[in-house]
Image 1 (cartoon, one colour):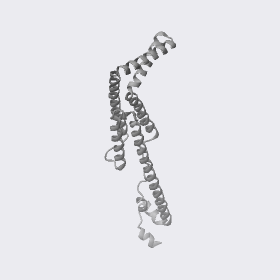
Image 2 (cartoon, rainbow, N blue to C red):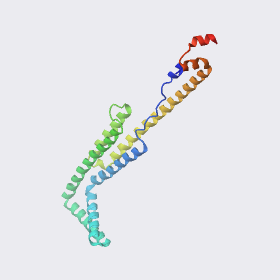
Image 3 (cartoon, rainbow, N blue to C red):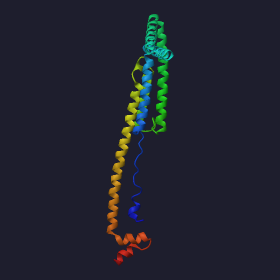
Image 4 (tube, rainbow, N blue to C red):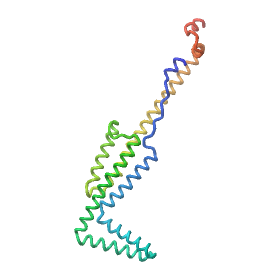
Length: 221
């Protein structure tokens, strides 16, 4: 191979996307589901009577085969539970406490799943430069806020994951732009090399066959 072509080396390789569209949808979907559950349990004194009413209504309708009876039982069970809960006072505190424990556990579980998805995708939180530090800062901040009672009604998990996804997708765009620039330079160098080869046909042909002294060929010419 001519010396000019040895200098080219291998062409730049297109970088692999760390956050393609499918992975983006999966991560945001997981974050959305957990955020809805966390919100539901963070206002458990309100949602508990509703859940009890819906459950009782579905069971009554299935057992009796009557939609009307199911609706009556559902509304009755939900209303009775809500009134009893707020009249007693203690019920609100107890159910609220249970809800906060569930919200706390779901926040931890949600972030564990998100961290696992990022890890298997090769997306670091530590040791990956400024972008990784930003991701770590976002994750820690939103995680801590999500553990605080009453503040956990804010969908911090969804907000945090959205910011992380945008961060990684921005990294992908930067790497793709760098790849295109490198490919452009490589193509220009390749064209220049081909032009030099066309200008020296005798010397290149002799080198390609594996014999011939370029100096002697030049003198002979």
